[in-house]
Image (cartoon, rainbow, N blue to C red; front, side, top):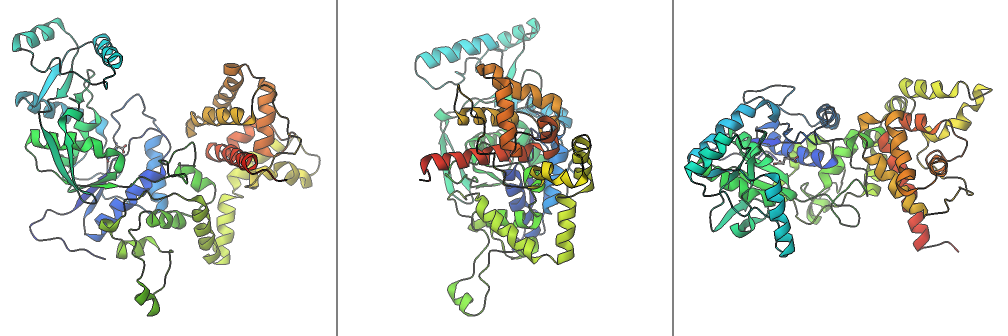
Length: 500
Ligand code: GLU
């Protein structure tokens, strides 16, 4: 459905603004898809901006993984760090001067101020508030410093942050899916806009960039609603017109909690490695929230197909962002698998064969596995006996799997999965995995040998597999963790519903 833009409106420009802090997330793809569709339907532009101001959480390889994952899904952008564009640079770390210039405007017009409290003073404030059972927040201590005090602090060379001066009252804005939302300012902190190291915070950089990049519609996840009043205040402080805001419902785990890597694979790398087709994945994301109209009963009687299967082009044709429902869409893996199965079955036989070759038996994968097998078999025919876990999806450990004595299986596996989750996909080397798994024993004084044996049984289905760490490296981070998680889920189901 191509929606017409009323006359005199600026051309539609939307963006996603992922932070490169780790593996590319399914939520980024979901929000990316909606922005992409919105722009394509209106002849607008879709911008990809990298919000890399949080240096503590920055992961160097993450940006490229985000690009690769989105392109894999067919979600392409018109402007971005890698493709350029008229409003660049599109990486926030390259825009420091712009933020500094802009924060000066706010200091000059009195909507922001320097706050010189030391980290110790702020900590003491936080402790006083906690003791008094008050929510921790900045008390506005340096809001009204005199010019002499400011000059004296500056002359001393004291470090400072720049905060927004949130006025009395409340802020109201319109969310295109929810209507009017009001926040009382008593609940809005004097947020830091620029840190003492001169780096902007998310709020400042985000608003300055959205304005300078002429973004007309900010379409992002629901979790940013509570930031929006701060953004609206910033637009007002600069005297800028604000964009339209659309906050999309969060994707949910099956139990309706916010989607999380502890309960679901959330990395797009996992879905790619585990053999999901991009067309199925993007179709599945398009089903979230009901933006794709289903035919009415009358239309069905008249021959309209009642289908949940549609391509990206069909989504561009028919998806309606304003119709998105707010009830949290459930990221249901069973459904995704069903959908993927439909796509696999629809492939021409040659294409299916190529897909199997490319993913399950790629030269690269086989070469890595061969390298650790050469010294371990006596006939080539045995290759499959020992390597089957590399190709199978559902691996069950032998019945007599060694059960650790001092703790439950669950404790061990949850801890192991946590340890592995802390590793980045790019850190997935034997040197990184070994200490992570050893920590499992050391932190709790559990036997390291027991742990490795248990993990080996669960991950490879045998206690006599090729070396565990090398095998895990080849098998991949996402799939290894998923295997642990699935084993744990099965155990839990058995525990709550034991077979007699
Ligand atoms: N950098 C934020 C993120 O990681 C962007 C949020 C927004 O779209 O404003 O999602």
